[in-house]
Image (cartoon, rainbow, N blue to C red; front, side, top):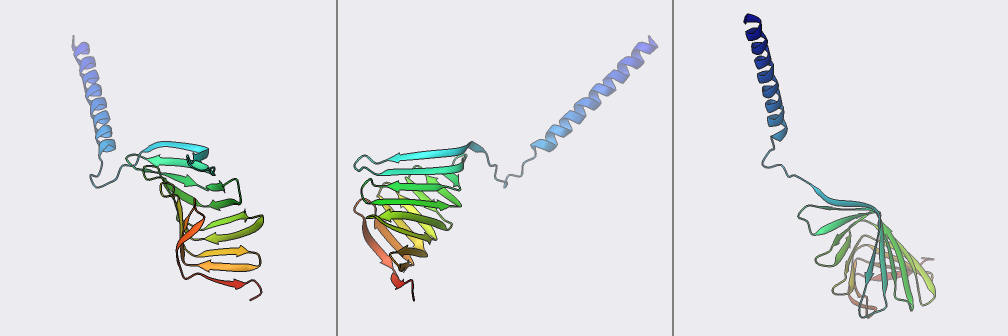
Length: 185
């Protein structure tokens, strides 16, 4: 009888020790600072291609990205190393590449906050350049360059601090500090 009591006592002490160990481990892992933001990915995808169609025009607009992810309760997706293809199937074709971009899908806005290099063809004439910030508003069908545009076209360099373009009309709506110089200057 005495051996049984000793064995049951040892088992009870082991059981209590295991439960205390597991409980303390659980309590330590569940401690969350109430001020700490918990970030959860909704999804993440590699090598994504977004094709955007316009109902009223024949514009092809494609964005290819190495990776795409979105956070919980956010209204945007982050694009990594995005490539942009814009072609109106008539006289304008543009290719651009940037480090990162954000696609605000509820507002239909794509923002490129880092330097973007681009090249293209307008009326069978090649051009190239770079820009600082680019916002494409698909609802309004506009593109706004808000930092450092440099455009090389037919031996001229066009510079601007800011420019707003209507993509459907191919018309400049607003500009700030636009200037040009020949490449020989």
